Image 1 (cartoon, rainbow, N blue to C red):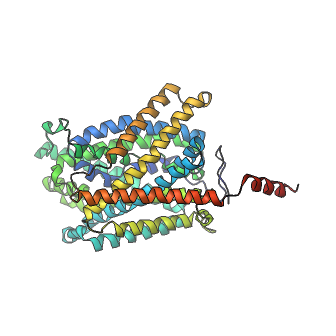
Image 2 (image 1 turned 180 degrees about the horizontal axis):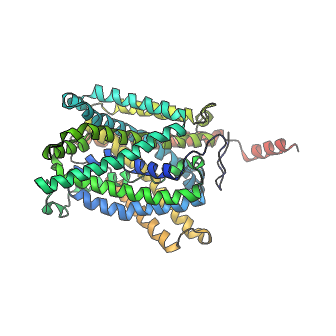
Length: 479
C-alpha cells in the first residue's frame, strides 16, 4: 500500500481527472445544499442575520484556511492530512474519523430530501408519501445504491453527476429567486420588516450550528487532492468563485422561502418545492413546478454524489495509513477507485437511514441525523482553523498570504465553529421529543468517539516497533 507523505506525493493508482471547471461546480454543489434551506428557513427571519454572521466569521475564514493549507499540503486527505501534520497522528485520525462519520450521518438527510422533492415531479397525488417511513427509507436506500455503483465506476463518470448537480443548483436557485421577486411585486410577502428585528429565543439560536455546517465543503476537493489536475493553480480560483456562488444561492433561496411561505408552515424535507408551489400558484405558473422539481432533485442528487465520493476517500486514506484494516485502502483493479471504502460508506448510511426512524416521525428523524452530522463535522473544522493558526505562527517565511490576514481568519473561524458546535445540542422548534432527541445525540457521539479510540488504540498495539521498522529497512536495502 502507498503512504501519503508531506509535499503532496501522488498516491499510486489514482487518476487526475478534476479540472478547474469541475472544481467550481463541485464546490457549488457540495456547499449549496438546497435541502439545508428548509430547516434553516423554518426558524424565521433571524436566519438571514445568522447567515450574514456565518458568512463573515465562518465561511470566508474557511476559504482562507483551505486555500493556505492546500498549498502547503496538497495530497489526498484534506483535513485528515492537515490535522495529522499539525498536531500528530492521533489528532489526524480523530479529525478524519469525525469528518467521515459526520457525512455518514449527513448523507441520509440528503437522499431523504431528494425523495421528498422528487415526489413533486409526479404531481400532488403521491406527495402524501413524503411522510410514509417505509416509502421514504426504501427510496433513500435505492438512491444510495445508485450512488455506490456510480462512484465505484470512477470520478471520470461520477463527476458528471456532480457537474449536473451544480448546474441544477444554479438554475433552480435562479428560478426560485425570480419567482420570489414576481410574488413580492404582485402579491406581497409573508416576510415583513418587523420580522427582521433580532429575536433572542434560545431555540432559534440553535440554527447557527446548522448554518455553519451547511457552509462546509470548501475542503472537499482537497480530500481528493491526488485526483485534481494542477491543484496549486486551480484550487484557489475554484474556491473563490465556487464559494461566492454558494453564498449568493443560500441568501437568495432563504429570502425567497420566507417571502413565499410563513416560516411556521415550512416543511422540513420538501420546503423548497413547497415554496415553489405557492409562488407558482400565485403567479399562474403551475406548469413550472414539475420541471423545477426535477431540477432541484438533480441538484440534491449532485450534492449527495459530491459528498459520497469525497468523504469516502477518508477511510481509504486511513486504510493506507494502517489505522483501519488494510482492506479499506484497496483500489479497484479496473476502475482505479477506493471501492471497499465506498461500500462501507454506503452500508453504514443505509443502516443509519433505517435506524433514524425508530420512535419518531420522518421530520424528526431527519433533524436528528442532521444535528449529529453538524456536531461531528464542526469538530474537524476546529482542527482546520487550529492547523491554520499553528502554521501561521510557526512558519512565517512560507506563508502564501499575509500573516495578519491568516491570524484574523483562523481566530474568527475557530470561535464561530466552536459556537456552532455547542449550540447544535439545542433542539430546534421542530423537535417534539426533546429527551429522545438529546439521548440520540449523546449516544451517537459516544459511539463515534468510542469507536475512534478503539480503532486507534488497536492500530497502536499492532503497529511494528521502531526497531522492527529499522530492521525491515536494512533488510530491504540488502545490508
